[in-house]
Image 1 (tube, rainbow, N blue to C red):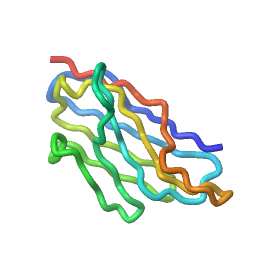
Image 2: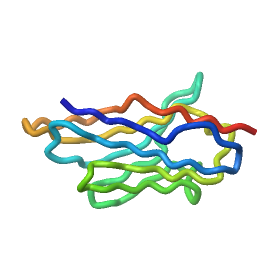
Image 3: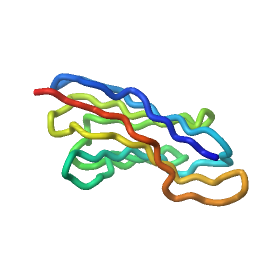
Amino acid sequence: QVQLVESGGGLVQAGGSLRLSCAASGSIASISTMGWYRQAPGKQRELVADITSGRTTNYADSVKGRFTISRDNAKNTVSLQMNSLKPEETAVYCCKAYLRSVAGIWYNDYWGQGTQVTVSS
């Protein structure tokens, strides 16, 4: 069994910063891409940023220059440093992993439960 657990959400004023972390644990053989997604009320879930095992990164245009994704392959963790946050970025932020279990099965969409980020104006 695999678990992804996020932490670091909370309430912050516009222009402030938060750092989200996600730890993957369980019967994991390897993790390919890890990413952060967000879903605001009444809106579709969207990719914020993702990072490959080789640390190639990809960002949504709206967060480029403000957010930084990083990972620790040895610890199976991924983090998202968010700076200059905007009220419209209030959402539930979820971690996703593309991983291979010790049984040799690839899972394209293992998700965490999510963490709430609220940005006040």
